[in-house]
Every structure is written in C-alpha cells, then in structure tokens.
Length: 193
Image 1 (cartoon, rainbow, N blue to C red):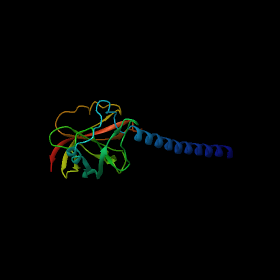
Image 2 (image 1 turned 135 degrees about the vertical axis):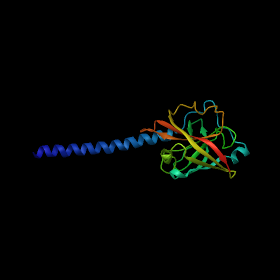
Image 3 (image 1 turned 30 degrees about the vertical axis):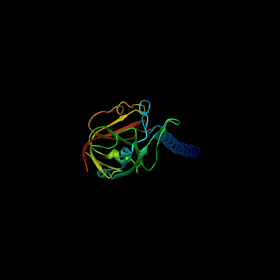
Image 4 (image 1 turned 120 degrees about the horizontal axis):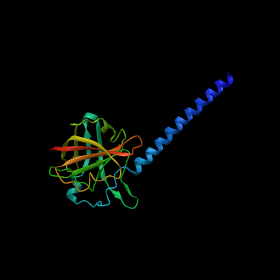
C-alpha cells in the first residue's frame, strides 16, 4: 500500500514538473517567434526609403480603439536588411514606413505590434464595425471602421504589396498557439479631422 502511494506521489511530481517545464519551453519558443517573425517578409520587392519631410510629418503617432481599451503609441518601423528584422518594441506599435501614411485619398496604412496586453492584444476583442482612430504627427486624426479580420502565414505578403485603392488601415499582430500566423485587422477609411 505504501509503495503504491509513493509511486502515485512520484508520478504526480513528474507530471507537475513536466507541465511546468513545458509551459516554460512554450513561452520561450513563443518569445523567439514573436521577436523574429513579427512581420511578413515584404521587403523583397519594396525597400524602406527615407521619408520626405511631408511624409514624416504625416506619420502615425498613436492608434486607439476605445471600445476595446486600446491606445498605443506608434513609432516609425524600419526593416534592417542585414539582420532581416523589423523595428520592434514590447511597449509600442510601429508604422511600416514602406506603407502609405494615413490620408483620405488611397493606400494601405500598415501598423504592426506585439500581441501583448499593452500593445495589440486588445484587438482580439474588436468586432466588425469597431472604430479606430489614428493620430498623426501633423495633428490630424483619421477614423476607420473594422471591415475584416484574417490570418496569414508570416511569409505571405500578397495582401500588402502594390495595394491600390481607397484608403485602408491594416493593424497586424501575431495569432495562433505558437504565434505561427499574422492576424490582420483591416479597417476602411471613414473620415479625417
């Protein structure tokens, strides 16, 4: 009886250790994935260029979605070809400078950030029709309405390259148990103030 009890306790300790160890490993792998694959590899056909003064003053500085309690600072995001990485931070979102600054005419304004509580995790609670506001360095505010949400593989950039059409806002974060997808929140332009 005592042997069976000791075996049972021993197996419980092994199981608990395995669960704790596996959660550590899962979190470690997720962190590696977040930091290395945060954006699709879109620079193969479009390289980041130095912005003109007019473009830089129109860059986004903040994105907010009041209905999901999201308000995040936005910094310019650049691709480093040598290290094949994008500008990233645990506390800010980034405007992909190879995309179109917010405007009322055309183009895709592309902002990306980590799937963390203080960055873009609240996006996962946004419903179709949710309103987003993007403030720019030239003191304008652009309003958008969520029209679609979909996941793509990290190396799929077909949705971004060469976009022509009415102005849209794309917010991107990671998705999936292993953050193996990029979740795109596509917003249609509503107004400019």
